[in-house]
Length: 326
Image (cartoon, rainbow, N blue to C red; front, side, top):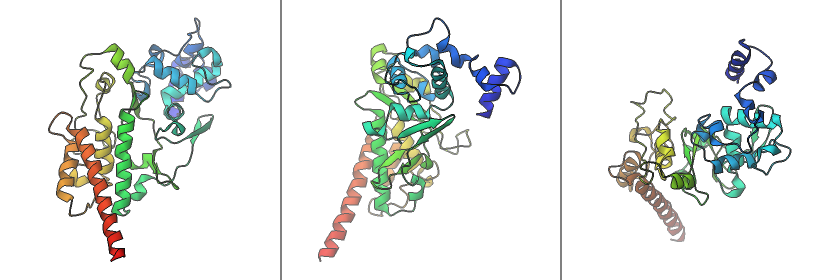
């Protein structure tokens, strides 16, 4: 925020410090209140401001405006229902910290795997407490880790294809960005700033070049990645935006949460130390999820991995029950 304040002051007043309220109302964040005032928040107003709106559709922006909770009269996608200060707040949030807008636009009470947005006070946004971070479960029993891994793979599927036809691609996946419900054990994403949103209906309508060919995120080893932060996944945003389908979320989950370092993971590895009875097949499937050898191989590997994990838990449960009965 300090960098934003200084940047605004320099652009508006030529000084590093100034009255931020004055500066923000004389910047691009006040463009929605300048005549002629637009009826809608349109893609050309905010495209590229942050990862969620790298390639926004009108349907997505209407949803964001309609769900924006920091207004006196929410529920409409028309900008006339927002006061000038609310329009500025919307644009600043969208550009600087879009996470609250993701939580509001894709809430958990509609089945989305995100934390519940509670409100904001100034620059501080508050979401519900879910439970302990996923990183706390690295030393949990295999059965518990398997349950969380299956949920992670199901989350990847839900965010990629759903009845709302929005693909939400996770670009920065790390254990501390997820929490496990204290009561129900449900895996929830508690950080959502780095999420690229693609409107699949818009892609179908506009049909950009190669739109029907799924984009497959290339595997990048932590040893060759230029960034020092291996959890951040460098990817071609424009290719995600122009394709109807992608295996990106499956790759992000396999690489950054599930695969141990020795298997090519980002350095954490929820599925370390698999049972000896499945270790060979497990290693083969996990390798296919990281770097598949055929088109569509990663999605298929994710499905096979989910079934294999389920079978290990079922077999373990059967053996325990059988032991108790004999």
